[in-house]
Length: 340
Image (cartoon, rainbow, N blue to C red; front, side, top):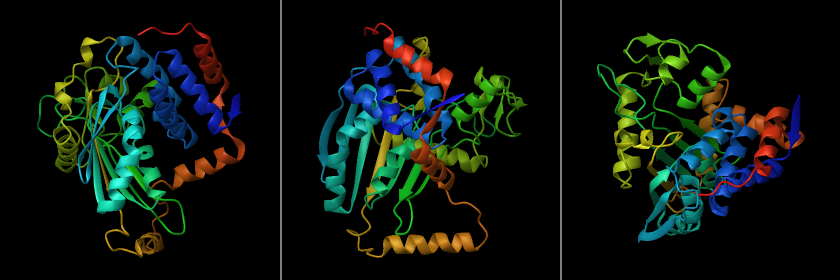
């Protein structure tokens, strides 16, 4: 039995849960928007199932739940944000207006977020920019989780990246992908549901290929997609998200010293382009023609199409939340507040 709930109601409920756990209003709101968007669009690996991870991480002391991001006007086309050991969603929200102002002026602008934690879906960080006519890319590094071909230990993270571009006759083109064959969140879901992984996704703690998600999680490793090519993408993300921003590399992670912590103190880089400011007045129409050509060639589904279809259903009839999950959220709101 499920409960149908509006996006606004679910966002408010999740924000209350996070505030009850000691998070600031800014962090609670920004993270709740991300979690709810994922649940609404069927990206369950980054939706409500992540709430316990946020709460455990708060309680561990690894993240500052009350962090207030510090925004710096670094250069004509650069915004720098120190997340102050808080969540990246709050840092992005704090610096968003200045970033958009810069890209409208310069045609290209970037935001470098450091000392941050990202535990949500990455597409949600870029889609809103495409909705106002901008092209957006973002890169986030994570704790070491993949082992490169021929390597003996994990160095690089699953290191996701996301891209969004506006269209004239439809929702933005948006995609979000990890550098590994399978995202870590999807491995967690497989373990929870007792499902095996497809071949070639990971290895156990001895380096032996396995399709057991528990073995990958318990000391094992994920594999990069397309072998060395995926490793190079993971390296690119590591450099852009950590080295360029001043964030930590994945192998510098210290979360293991904080029992319950499930995030990495790392970095995020966001790059925006204004097609009109760069002289591409017909950009959105050209994107439509490109996508039409791809579909005419036989491609059955565009990136993000399934999410938008799920979103439409949720907007018409509400977000379907398991009753047990809904009751758990209500119980968390009524619990004694967590003191940090």
